[in-house]
Image 1 (cartoon, rainbow over the protein chains, first blue to last red):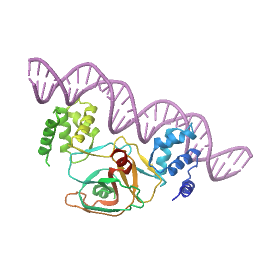
Image 2 (image 1 turned 30 degrees about the vertical axis):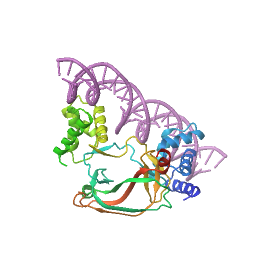
Image 3 (image 1 turned 120 degrees about the vertical axis):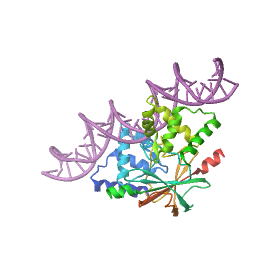
Length: 146
Length: 146
DNA sequence: TATCTTATTGCAATTCAATATCAAGTAAAA
DNA sequence: TTTTACTTGATATTGAATTGCAATAAGATA
């Protein structure tokens, strides 16, 4: 999807959800669409400030979260969540319940995948480790709320 | 590894690294070894406080980070790092450079694994999505720092 | 176009996780 | 015991993100 298509999606979704297309919101989204990197809210804020000196950081945070809910952005990294620690040093992966947030250790074997070298522009990066996170609803939540 | 073996490891590694076995440190590690859940530093602090009312939260944070460096604990969730956002909505995974921290989108196909149902105590959990994180050193860092 | 409704903004204060500073305390080696 | 270096507790501080609220403005409606 190119920049124009992305912007069109912003327009469409805004109309659909009764959201208003403010200059701030458009600037934020434009900065994100034009970047080839993954940006943090603060990075977007710093960039947007150059054009909108009055812009508030809260506006940037609010809008970016809203764009995630609206399906305009994806995000990565678990903000706010505190680091979790574990004495289990065996090789293992994690299952995270989307409902209650509880983390379960899972033991996987034969983890395989094929890397699309064409689309993934990693060049000669050296890949050491892979961590797999499974998401879903845990048994407890299925029984109690499912 | 059972509790006793874990505790022995704490003793061994402490000696090895010239670290001191303070009551606080042992209490923190004991709480972690006895828990079947992944605990946050604050959760450990709250539990440890019951026995050590004078305990400072800083001590808990310091010790737990130190235990990770010493290989006594594993941790999950990247603390401190700000959330990153992305307009790429195609299904993709991520490669994270351990050296510079930059995140690259990677496109994987045929992601497969086998779940050890015996060891992974998920019961009838419903698994929806899997996210794969690859770690290593990116091409830029390989070129610039060896 | 004027008016109205309600989403949105900017600001400031606040939360929350985590870290830094530093004097005082204490394990453990000598 | 004495010494020394690691640790602690208290406090201040950082950084990311959120919240409350009055003022503002987008977009619908008349």
